[in-house]
Image (tube, rainbow, N blue to C red; front, side):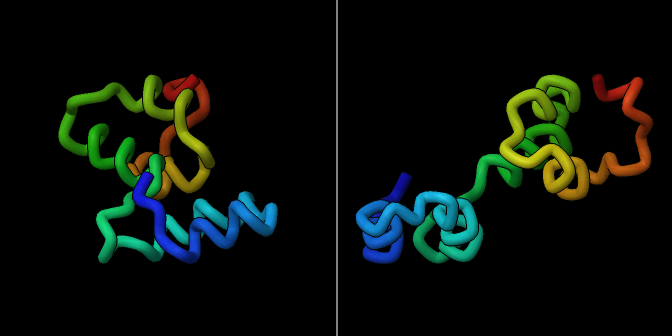
Length: 77
């Protein structure tokens, strides 16, 4: 993770729940949330959707990013 002043402040103030959102907006610093990275790996065929879904921070967000929202639960777990 790239440490920015904003991330440092969130950690210091105990607002760690806000870090994921800061990562999402920190693209200019090279930050990318795990779910976006997993979705890209699924889209390129490097990782199976089921495997990525198990490791996603937010499964619904991941499904949307990966474009797999129309699948049934049976095909993804």
